[in-house]
Length: 156
Image (cartoon, rainbow, N blue to C red):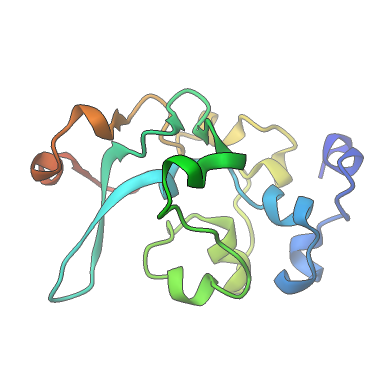
């Protein structure tokens, strides 16, 4: 972990030693790799429960940064936006991206080398081709009945 992350008050390799419930808010937020996948609209098969990703992004996703453009006040615009917490992660595992650090840590698996906490670079997720940078369409441009036309495989 780079000095930049230590300066933010993060314990060294905290994701390997600190239970999720004991992480500080800064540590919890630092687990997010900034891929943007969780902000994609998903389609769920009613019969199987299988979840498919679309390239249709939440209206608040910044396609360049892959971050929410209104994160602190996002619920004013998108009331149904999920608040992921250690206490709610189990109920959201079925749709969390396979590469998601919250999923990986919860499952006791290591973070990928491209994760900013490992690489020390916030843009490493983009350089690894894992993020949704430049791949999304805003939800207000595509009618919901056409979302099936925009199904994608998760970039890994």
